[in-house]
Amino acid sequence: MKVIFIIFCFALAAFAQEKQEEHEEYENFTTGQRFGTWGLNTIVPGLGSIVIMEDWKGARDQWLLFGIGAGSLWLLAAKGGVNTGPSSFDIGGATLLIFGPIFLCADIVYNITRSASYDKPKYNNDYKNFTNGQRFGTITLNIIPGLGSAVIMDDLEGAVTQWAFVGIALISLPLMDSKYEIKFIFALNYFLSTMYSINRSATYNKSENILLGKHDGFHLSVLPNRRGEIMPYLLFNKAF
Image (cartoon, rainbow, N blue to C red; front, side, top):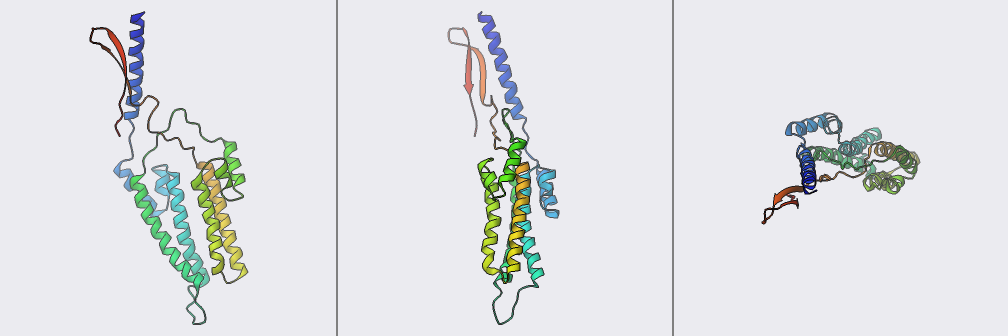
């Protein structure tokens, strides 16, 4: 019976060691991949994040920053630039002129930092992602911006981003000169919020990227004690 128990301990130790080696085989992105991601994102925002890193969050953030910046400059051009007439100060045009470069610069900085710092995720084997029904329900509830993301997916980032679209529209109200501009801004922001909701709900994954594997850090060894008897020892060692 003791022999069977020792064999069992050896088998369990080998299994734990195999799991530990699997974890140690984890390889992060190389410097070349990070430079490639940054380069592709410079040409087309988000392209490198998707193609090289499969980083949909980084791509979405870049689309948001670049979209607001480029959209502001596009609205400014459609408006005919900043009205510099002596009659009144063009607050709307000045705001668009400021927002455009700020968000475009933020996109550049975000691309650099995200490409340099984003790590390849590892997921727990027991991980269960959102179902298609949950994703569809999230998109449906997000008719009220952010509701489905907060209630079903517990995705605070997705909800806050949608609220930001609505907030930008509300902040822009005093800057608009006519009802047509107000309707256009609301329609544009609601459309962007809807597109973001569909993409976010379809691609957002449940947060379970735990770096510790199921047996990571545990080592089972079979060693003789002070009396020469073979005994199993379960140790835990983890470096941070």
